[in-house]
Image (cartoon, rainbow, N blue to C red; front, side, top):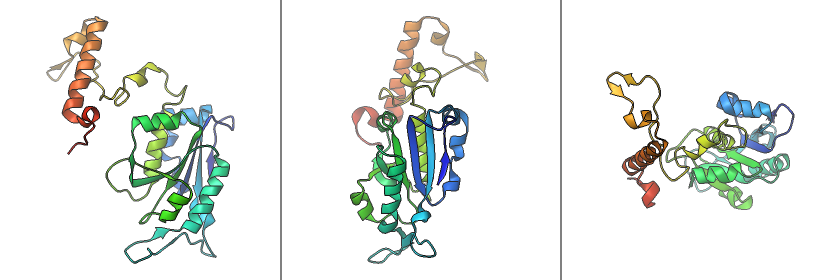
Length: 241
């Protein structure tokens, strides 16, 4: 098991990832605000090698699909003990399987997970995992999008990054969270900075007015316009396409 502790050896929020490739971690989580939060003791990370619970001399972790078919499936008698071990390392948090057939990851789910003690994430490989593990260990299936990756590791990093940035003390300005996309059921309004004129495009005059009420109204109006145009499902509840 690879352990990436906070500087003081403890953390309020803990992420454990079961994976066949622990060397992929911390990966992108080792830079920027998330890495600073790790060093500051706001969270910790464990990358647990599934193969440590493999069977026999060769530490077998998978086998052919029952009933035939292509590829390999991760075995229940390997993943069960691996998940049991993970729960001793990271008790209290939900067990989550990153799967393209899972419920879509939303900001509401991220807030829910960030408010808890942490998460234990199972990063699958091959054709997936034995269905009995999902039922037997009460795994919650979550998807980061309608596409298929080589494995669940990148999806685990996405979920961790999204949750960690919501932890108290990670972002300098708490107010910035309330104006982000999805926080109020809307996409974020357009942002501008210097210079005032760039390649024939100018910053909207209202943003230069100093009138905070007008600016707030413009931003709200733009957020609603962008949401209607790009993600009407956020307001209607109907999926795009």
